[in-house]
Image 1 (cartoon, rainbow, N blue to C red):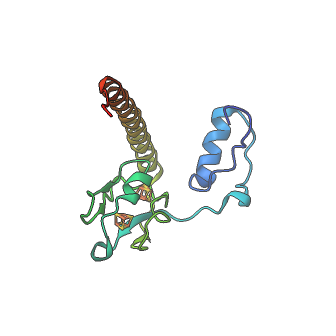
Image 2 (cartoon, rainbow, N blue to C red):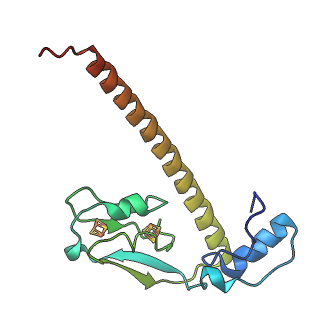
Image 3 (cartoon, rainbow, N blue to C red):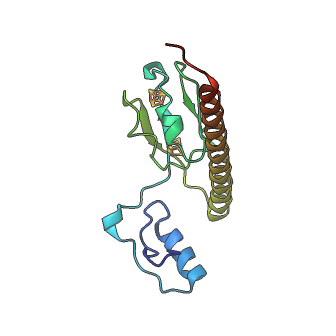
Length: 154
Ligand code: SF4
Ligand code: SF4
């Protein structure tokens, strides 16, 4: 939208509430949700069938708000209070042990507060990822520098 290449009605999770908010913010007329981008669903949460989880951590990598707890080769679980119901963790799971379950629809105040929390968590995750990438690049640089000092004798 900022680049002028997307319309205000392309976000199924936001639904009509989201479109109205965007229309008001950008001073544009309301448009119904474009079905090409999916349909709006009732609020839902991810749930991990823990006995089937193999601890591959693929869901953790996919979750944009760090709402999944677990470690490699250990059972994972979803932090229900933090899950936005975006479904991004479902497809990466190799054993299909993540299911989406419907949950109560919060009132508009709660919904707004939840959006702000999700935004903060997403931004914190982005910062952490950036920091990890910088640290990784530094480790690679140091390794290369160390290797360059090694003289191989035939
Ligand atoms: S549904 Fe979205 S927010 Fe919830 S755990 Fe999965 S990826 Fe995270
Ligand atoms: S992607 Fe599925 S199997 Fe892998 S850690 Fe997550 S829930 Fe467990």
